[in-house]
Image (cartoon, rainbow, N blue to C red; front, top):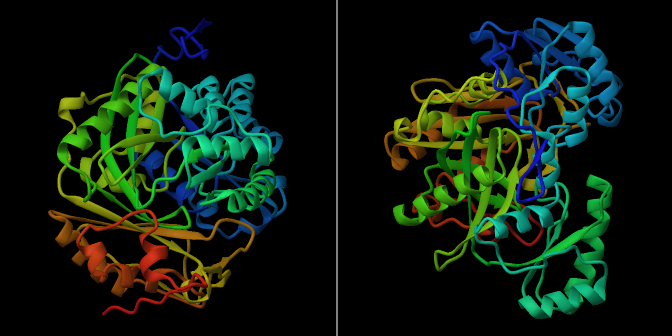
Length: 476
């Protein structure tokens, strides 16, 4: 092995030989599993589904070529059970495993286990995943590569006294952030020392429960910020390209709700700087496969690295809609050892795409989860409309997993056309029997600030929601 300047073990010349992928086990569930099955089918690749006892009637089980039960409903006993997943892969004679997002997708131990069993992991090298899995290490790597990072701790903080010292140094408000994990879990904002102490305790407890890791870092909290991320693809031959940026600023408590590409809120000059920084970061890591480099942008137009997601993102369809590039298929080709088919200058983005995440949640009750049986399901269609989902009429949504039912994605020649198309699609989208976030998205699409592109990470909380976190805005 070779060791990079960042201390990453790099496998020189790994996966340079082209070895076709013939059968893929999808170590996930829900809409991403259905999405991967579709891509594999179009490439003539056989698929293997795994499922828990709670998911026996899920669509991915029916649509895959083979399916194996890997345990009870609990994710710990099924979708996080590496032994059961590997045994299923061996039994099915799969030659590659697709991790999706969530569950084991960013677990370097899982990628190593795949290697041990002689099965290719569709993702980056385990060493890269290990480095990026801790935000403090990712921040340090970004700084070493000359990519801007916000003020904050260069090491994890151990307790209230040390946290208070760091906070005084970088200045309030500060963002309390778990070093492990993601998805907005454990994030807290503190405007003074009292809030810091309370937030630190709450963040550590949530981080320990969610990620089995209570380590915390502090960063300068940037108010009314934009959340902009860059989709990159990198092969095993040193080629790296970006597929443009996505704006993920429409969030609720750091959970993404709506994503779009391109970003409506940054200049072309700033956009190019961010794209260049993302590619520079990926090259510096000797990154392989698909990944997303995430940034925060302040009101003065300064941008700062947040983290890198070493997997496909929930919001990848908006990038596919504006570039015409099927990211899942590219991941499979990279895993087979092929060079990227497109050079950077050949990647042309056209039009505008918007994605709404449709969750089984009640917006009128603090977005409380709403599992249950879907009595009626009708998805919208038409030109420029795409639905990635896994549910159907009569399906019972389990309460064991994430509440995401699917994603509604639209494309238009302009942002105005995309918004109008999204309004029409949301009007046609019908899910009965459970509560969903569809009514919430309908209201956002009619809000003048969203229409004007005046969005930021706390826009939903500041403008649309009341003190209890419930939906208050009632625009037409």
